[in-house]
Length: 186
Ligand SMILES: [Zn+2]
Ligand SMILES: [Zn+2]
Image (cartoon, rainbow, N blue to C red; front, side, top):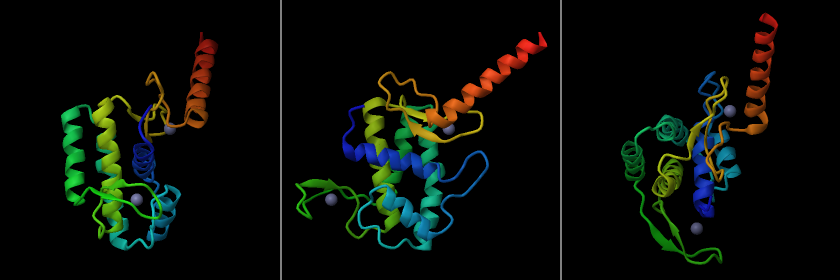
């Protein structure tokens, strides 16, 4: 995949944010504002500062809307979902240079709330993927016990599991057991 660093980071953030709510067992991995700060800091969001209860609520509400992009079967529908997110977040692309960095684009308004900044960031990342590859790279894990989403960055777009080491391996073992059971019954 030849997405730039910004796109790479922001689509990873989008997928990881969706997966903070386990779609199979409902486990909540963003229980409070402090975990939002930790989560965003781990994803290299600059100057996270504090997360408010409003940020927490907004980011939780964002998850099903992002999942809808990952599971969309219609490109224009996915584009509409992403455009709506960008609009609602009040994005305002601006060239900027700070902290010794070269001139680059910021997409969120300077005074945007934390959740708006994150919404802008993930929506711009998803927009780049849609523009370059359509729906081809958006995936839901093929494991029977996991519904995590991910972006398939493999060259031939053949990745089936969110994590080949865990979900891929579990599915492999389950298939192996099923075949053995079938063999015994015969
Ligand atoms: Zn910057
Ligand atoms: Zn999985």
